[in-house]
Length: 260
Image (tube, rainbow, N blue to C red; front, side):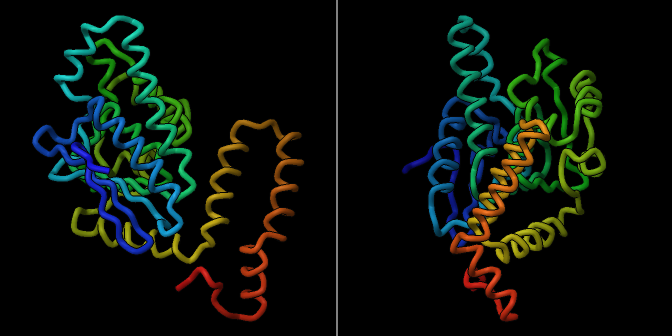
């Protein structure tokens, strides 16, 4: 597929989706939203892809919504706005639901809705000096479609602090709050990401996908329901081909067959 706002760099086991509008600080519009949704859907279905990275070309990860797109949306009817908001919400959900481990690598800035992109990923790493903000309240809007993913990452109290004020924080503070997993000086960010990728590639790909489903399901289940769900899931895992290979390799003191 030919993309106009993103690029895909597919290497053995690793696929990188690049936000590719550096001239507007990788701000997203309707086209980018659709292309991101399609790219994550496609890559998530490929057996040869083990990890998906999300990055931004240039000096800024993503400045949030494109100003020209916002000008158009200001003239839309409620029904038109509802449709476009639904497309953005579906984009975040597609990233969150990917069976592959997803990693956002954030430099420069992540403003407004850009934080939904990084929060929907399993891992997010930023430079110490990256600026992040939920700036929607400053212009009379609310960070609605990204809120479920921010709440999952940092909880209600910290989400209230950031969303109600719209204040800017840097990568170091974002790491302390849990909005990103870790921050580092720009020169060290690549090594941090590579270390996580290396760890992920030692895990069984089916097990990782099942673990993601497990955690997503458990966050919405009461404890009584969760007990039966989790006991069934581990029983299924133990008799699965990957589970059998993993246990056999452990007992034989060798590497399992998914580690090349």
